[in-house]
Image (cartoon, rainbow, N blue to C red):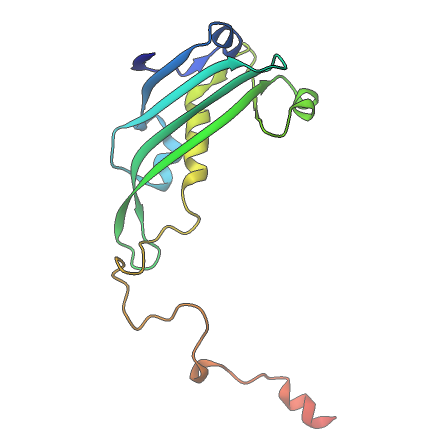
Length: 170
């Protein structure tokens, strides 16, 4: 196992033949899409990736990744820290035909024209999927006003139905 700055692109076939296990990091500053939706709290994304072959002879890329980011609460608009932790299992494919034949327990990842995958983009995509759709504190930690209404509107705010007049005409 190596603790190093991981390569951005890697040949999965050659790595799987060697049963490569890499533990390293990516600089968060290189993940522009992730930085567009959150603030960076830690400067590095921790990544652990295993390259292997399964019993069917398919290349398997599995691993984990984690990073601490700052998100904006959508209730009170204050910043809060959240740990994003993901695990993934992929198998590289060249085209849509290979993807259709892939077992359902593997996600497909496309090879580039050199037969490599972009490892940094793979990790960034998985971290982006881990961000909540509506980031927010827990209710206890949120500084939103206590009289805020969540869910159903109170009775006094409900407006009369304008079509009730038509019922009277019948």
